[in-house]
Image 1: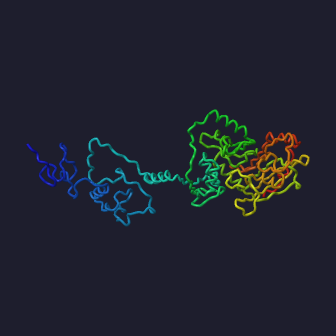
Image 2 (image 1 turned 60 degrees about the vertical axis):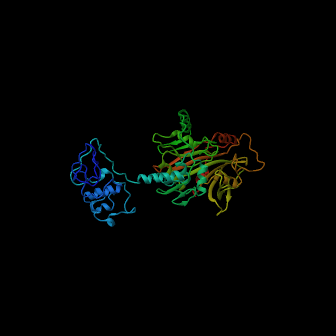
Image 3 (image 1 turned 30 degrees about the vertical axis):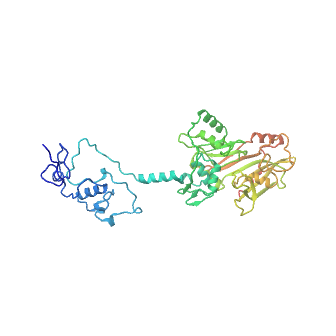
Length: 476
């Protein structure tokens, strides 16, 4: 017996009106008018798109606004009835929303259709706020392709210099590279070029060019080395509390890393990183061969507050130096403009410049002679008001009395180093007084003479406890 296949659009046969035959053993779904066809459906064949499906579903429940935007989530009934002009939103009027999920669509009127056997219930979490996944993927792709990053300045980074902001965000980036990025104008702050000493404010946008960073974390830190470094740093502490500490930096130890510099204070501070991930932060710098007081902040807030104290000149600093010759004026004031001889070199020699010269900055120092030895050597106490690179060394050379052991600025011809005195820079950050970052009360710390300067003081008969007249010098 030959069975004739059901014809499309016919009647009186099994599956009539459906546009296709019903599968064997399948009964019509309850709750639907007719056997397999809804009378209000004019189309036949598969649903061609999600839009068509949404429109048909909306028409089935009497939604007159289905032809506008039936997939928009969170739209109220009053908005749906408002028509296309009142119901549509622009990107500036409302945030972009994620597509409506099946769980979020309102249920059609009437009895719920029976669930197919074995069908699992689908519960969808509410749509997240913020950028959609497509926008996030696009932003990530743009960053990956260009390498350009846009950073936002946080509250606890207020007042930071741009170069220190970069070294904080990218600790594996060499400081010379940081200065090069800023100097060449590759870094932009709110769309504008910036200088290394410009200060940042919360909310500013910092555009960072593609960076080639050294991989970190590939080699685990040695627990034994961390313990050794931590013990060494603790041995240098002159003052410490919960917010800050002041170290007695020894001669020859660099403060930050650079070309060929492996061991430095900034790296050693890694060993003191707390359980909360907070690493102590440098607040200011000393030259590699300058010994004495170096302030370190334990938190970002303390670092920002202490940096403001330096910037507002609330900090008082006193340096001791051994210089060649004896000044004719025992106490005086040195005021010049200083600029780098080689602007591209981070550690270049400073020269006395004129006002208006490129890169020239005003530098002010007060000095007082505490004692002298046979009119050949002088013990000078120096009080810098400004904080320029190599300021004290350049100023001492400018008045004709360079600091003993200075390889950059000591240029007196036919001058011989007295016997018993080491050829090392005789410059000490002797004392610092700075407001505490939390209480505002002054913290006053004094550093002892380093071994090579103590040897010279003993040889020349200088008494380190002698009255220092620099304390009476003006503050500006």
